[in-house]
Image (cartoon, rainbow, N blue to C red):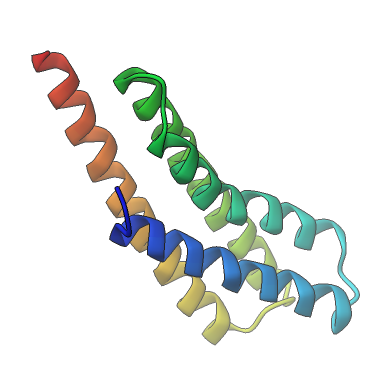
Length: 120
């Protein structure tokens, strides 16, 4: 998985999430939702990195599945931030698109891994 598109995209997404949390805390004085989106949004890439050295194929699948769940949770927090007017539609659209792309790649990775694991 060295320098995979998933690792790169999840890392870049995490950086965007960190900047979003910084903005929410410094400019909007919002601390609860910002911590939630920070936690879930940075967990996506961290779990992908953990999966890279999974102890087994099942461990790899488990970590990727949890990463997928964290990405889905991040979409929820982004929607809450938009609908509560903490972030503008333009920011939401951009971050939501990145998150949706990560989810699509993770779904594909989990499905393929499960299919390949069944053949073993």
